[in-house]
Length: 584
Image (tube, rainbow, N blue to C red; front, side, top):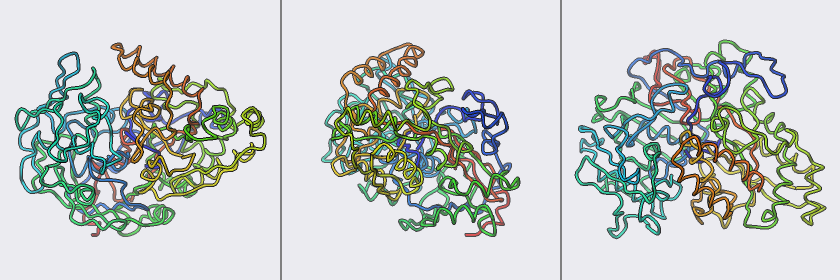
């Protein structure tokens, strides 16, 4: 899913590290340097498990957060945690992910639709039929026209940042700028209120997987308020917005018109959800570790800070409340390939060699919460283990980096700037120190997470380096490499994925060729090979794959890390053991 930059999203699909499907044995892993000695990894001990038993109906679930949402408007929502929250609580999509821990959480199931869609014309046309009885918060029915309208509004230039599957695959979408002035997409047809037909510009057998995106949620035209819709999405899910004070508090209450008979995924256990924003991350960790009073019924929005691991891992009682699923997302340093000095591949390769991945991993909590990356796509898309085609030491090679800089005419190095989310500052400082050893002097610019993507998505005004990440939306290389390295979809504002602004004709031609392959195994092998070919051109440096550690309050039940949402808590099933203990 997108951006899944690892500060927020990411998707994913495949099985978590503690499950055999990801190529690792249950709860045990051997580090590359053998230091784990085969011992159980305490952070991954609860991976694939549901903690706290079955929740009881009622009470208030509190979410403690150090940030606001990036977007809740379904046309703009493409950050992992935000997508989890929006599609599990506020609005429904044509299909969605199964509510289950582990590998089962990567399976898609019908949501608004009665099935997973019917292809025709060689998978160039897809037809979905909507369920009867699905209603908005005011009791009016959800219609196919509402889904079509949200797909169309996702093209609006004043609503940037959302998933662009529609732009990539719908016929006649090139140059379309949304439904303003009554303009509509002829390739999205609604022959009646419960039927929607998508006509694509090329065969796309994976199209049902794309319809899990918030882009394929319904928005009635009469309720659309443009950019202001972010503040008050109109609910088709089990909860509706009661109040939203940006950067301070969001309160959700039940949508009385949500019918659980139409919804096999969402359990909607709590009566209310309260998101408290603007807290300090270390304060959140300490409150949940202590789990006193109302905090017993609370969860964290963000991952446990690396510094807090020492308070959690040695304490067996707290560790029992720790979730730590793999995000299956790759953190990367992306370099602006359209500007000097990063328009020179030798400079970019110098960054590859200078970067000390081991130091960044240590700053990120160590091997208990991270694995180093030697490729762009996560291990799940390589059958469980990333290849190491460049053979660069995990600690980097400053000498080789200096040689490359000298070849590029920069024997004394150079100065540059790197933008990071404020939550990644420690990782950025480790990068800064390692690049400095090769003569690359980096100034770090930190941005609040809620504004991070808008900042780095402004291609004219952003810095030359950014620290971000990507997660596949489902188990296919087609949801990773094209989104991160296809230069044809770079936008001046609201750019996402391709933050290196990489535009390489040979790479794009190969992407098109792989996309046209009808044999999935052949396509998988081709994506894997292309990963290494792009890595040699060095538009970005893969750094690490994180887990998403979450400490739960003692009164939380039905909790697991959802692999398709980057390891974030699955809000479809979370609730309270004893609702009477909650406050709010």
